[in-house]
Length: 45
Image 1 (cartoon, one colour):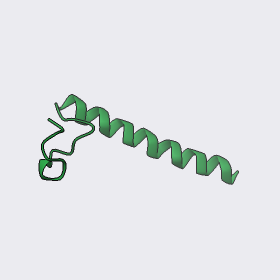
Image 2 (image 1 turned 135 degrees about the vertical axis):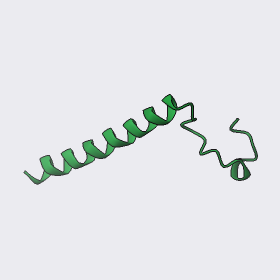
Image 3 (image 1 turned 180 degrees about the horizontal axis):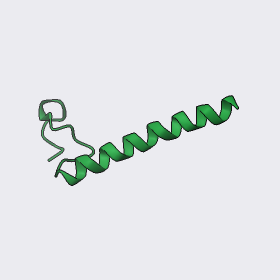
C-alpha cells in the first residue's frame, strides 16, 4: 500500500511539472531558458 501511495505522489509531481512547462510554452516562454541571460551569456535566445 505504501508503494502505491508513493507512486501516486510522484505521479502528481510529474503531472504538475509537465503542466507548468506546457503553460510556460503556451505563454511564449522557453522551457529551457529562465530568461535570466546574465547566467547563460545570452546563448539561450
